[in-house]
Image (tube, rainbow, N blue to C red):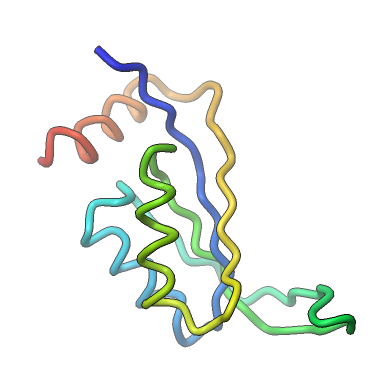
Length: 109
């Protein structure tokens, strides 16, 4: 059996778009779970200038092999020209939770 490479993917999105993006990714089974945070303030560089935005974070529990598919979906789902999508591998976790991730994402329960 192939070893699963689970992780957490993070997407920043405008507050009014974050839940819509989270639902779409979960409905497509590209993530077993999505959590949407309360509003955060992002401070970043964009086109040579410091910018600020009020956003929410979408935290996805997913598998590394799905990142390309998530990235492709974001092209249609996300309003930004360059949406944030980063993947952080999970190196350890609750074995029962990891089994649940496998079941949800690969056994299609």
